[in-house]
Image (tube, rainbow, N blue to C red; front, side, top):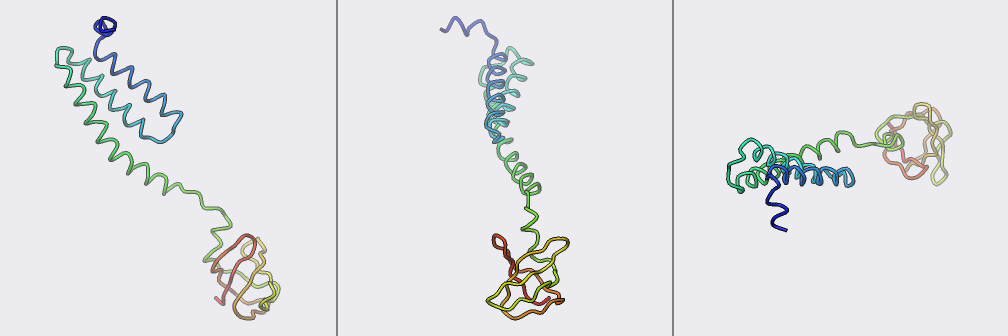
Length: 148
């Protein structure tokens, strides 16, 4: 077994590890294996550029690069997820103004119109048709409103 790897250059071993990690990243989509794979690529590059260097040099470069990328890459990925987070249209109703279409007389539901959508609505107090209201919350198909 030693003779098998003795003839393989160090950079090729690091490159092989990087390829495997990057391929696994495509299956996991967590970004963690991406950072480790890029660290292994950095080790392969150092081993290729400095073939006479001790074996611990590309290992050190690989580990250091992977750690830096893990720390900063996770922060970057978290920011990207937050920035691109999908908010369903129905959840975007909360905080918007609407108009009462059919009077709301608790405990009976009324109807409101928000934009071009009509929703069943409930309120703590009686609200007449034509009043402007503010949507406070939403459950499955009913919104809770109050006077705007």
